[in-house]
Length: 295
Image 1 (cartoon, rainbow, N blue to C red):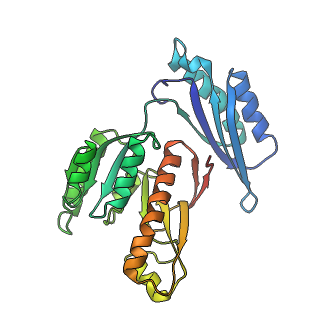
Image 2 (image 1 turned 180 degrees about the vertical axis):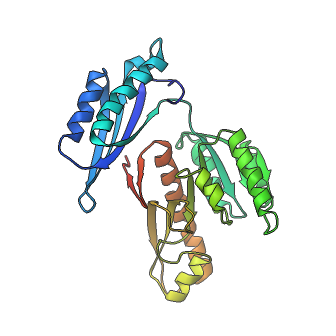
Image 3 (image 1 turned 90 degrees about the vertical axis):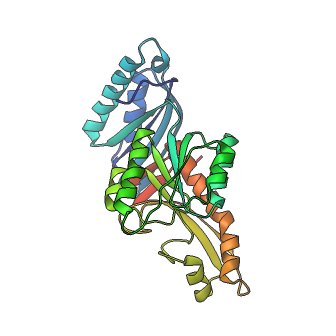
């Protein structure tokens, strides 16, 4: 069980093999607990026969005199249904805002966008630190009053640098790491320790133009659309579960530098959407795909 909630709101996420009566079973279980469903959304993948549901609900007992006992009762109720129908499930309570670490290199547009949206209240989280392998974006962090940790990464120091980075994440109780154009490949050990908790922005419409210099690849191919992809980082480079994508038109007149400039807007919006949806518990990962219950 997670720590006691701060409000009477919670979100239930489930996935399992599809079968009749799943929606009714979950609704009845929550009703029996005294909960009021505020919003529910579900999806059945007809190709795989998989069922997915997100239920956002209100349970007055979660904000009562003994919230931990209320959590235990609620989880026992859901567990009974989940065991019967072989569901994978998790409940996210209305607790403290999730804690986010932003990783950057030298490119600032995604970092600025996230920090401005956070300041404006569009992204509900805490950002206790920014981590970079260069010192060039420290003024941005200073502008927003966020501690900036410069940890150089070289081939010889990569293991040591990652150990320092992971120690920072653990010390600050980080829930999500955002690679906001962080131009380093994380080790398998790092990624495995934060499975489905590292979001990367790749500056192409994956699976097209994976790897380095995608805008130059796109220009050489003469494409008429370029895009950006936010995905969870996995040990397979640029092949993790895709959360969000978008595109913008380009023409034969555009050079790689023009694609870079045009692509920045798409990168910003795609990354911010993905981060917000993760923070709002709107994403279910199933193998190498996602179901995103976006508002």
